[in-house]
Length: 473
Image (tube, rainbow, N blue to C red; front, top):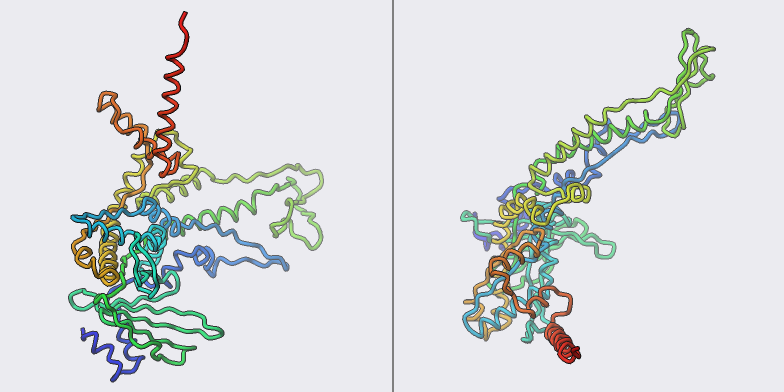
């Protein structure tokens, strides 16, 4: 692998040659154009199969039934909800007042960038498109973090193939990232402009291609003052739905074929039974209408024949068993719970029992957490580097500050059982103070907790006075 300075040699190399080398992606990620065919239900075989088309008969279109079961989007939504419904907890270990200030500033930066909502969006992009990058950058703008003023405002931007972006991380032979490039397209008036941004530990470069007329430099290279790549990249080998698309397709075909049969055969058929060899059908008409809008089928036979409705017997039990087994196989293989309304109301059970149902998916969260924790640790280090420039007087505190990220899997919270267990363990004695109980209950705002406690004490005092002054016989 040549040195990054040799690749981005702007004096001796053309922009097209530089970009071609920066596009040498030495990791394998499934292209989005292939994943999109699984992720988008309108691109499933039940819609795109050339042998399964709507039919035109006598000028009327006979629509084919198309039922989709979008396990791909469902798996993406379920996984991001399981991992990030409970926000990521950043635990700061401080040893002195300066480190406490540094911790407050860093947490304020994350909160101002709406990190909890951002994690839901980023996880959706990664689980669907298999890669994602977040770029942090500073703007010259007066702002405050945790009450401490700064001349710089720290912001972030996320790119993903799900949004039409193309990511090109470049690693050396030691698997260290030496450049991170992002290609994206935007409309500028009537022109289509393709941007190619490259970040190294020294500079930020940008080239543009206007209406496919060739690459040229767009900006003077901007120095990277933090001396590290300001982007955090993460990728995975397979989408979150793994290899379950085929099961989903089989489920869609089964339901779609059943829909065609049901539509054709469920309308009443009036049949006349006869021993006569002569069939008296209406002139220029077949015995059975071919369009789906007919109210009923009329079949005519000889005079004096026996007539009656002929009903169609569908193998509903076999179909139901097959489709339910497919659904069960999908959820079991992906370790994702079926949290649909039908499933939740089907079997009444306690909150403690429902917790047990989430054990498998909690193990799935643990399995997925490794790459995410590494991603969050790198992100903290990038923000730390910016903070040292924004607050030079606290540079030492930011260096020594320890930050630990914790991912907590979603689970049903049955507090009543937990409180009962703790109360039993203490022999029925109080386990929390009244103020803590009011705060945890969240029936009053945080700033009114103390006032609420005082009102309770006043009401208790009034009740005691009334009991004390009650006349006795």
